[in-house]
Length: 227
Image (cartoon, rainbow, N blue to C red; front, side):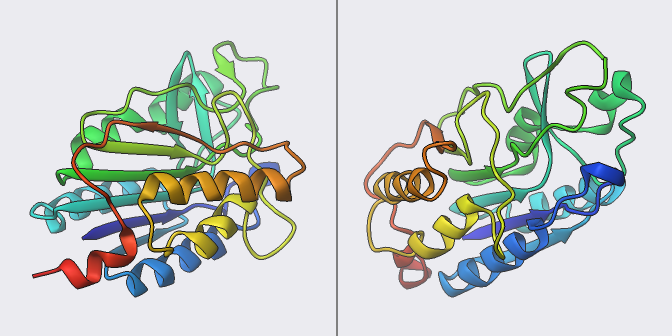
């Protein structure tokens, strides 16, 4: 099992985020405990992000289970979801499509494996939403999960995920506490949803898009199933 952990926080000006680095490091520690081989990318500009994705694609080429965790800014532009590197220029709203990494392309081209788990804590306040440029929408757009893929949003499409007042965002904190429970991932994510909704007073409702097949997928058992 291989995992790619991305945490982007050091955005320019008011787009800067507080918790993504803590979130990424916390998820790295947790996934290592669960038996994953982890690749970590922090505060990546576009060139660094693409290089890291290419290296991960090669390193995890023979993996049975792969996992992508991203904490940082994500944007919906003309109905397409993008993950944003830290060197985005919000004054150039018309070029943000070129600056961002399309989520669909990232999953299809850079995340190998028969089973793919994607966790996007990426729906923080969109700093470009009030820029005056057309095409920007609140939160992330619904997404079609390819076969064998589960895509989990920190909050449902069109919503905004909180960065959090503590060490971690509400969504990542719930993942850290629950993801190692000895249950199928679908049940784990229901518990994550319940916890986040309770902690945020219902303001944030995690959501999943899934196309997994086969039997149970229990992450806490992965280390025991490695050859």
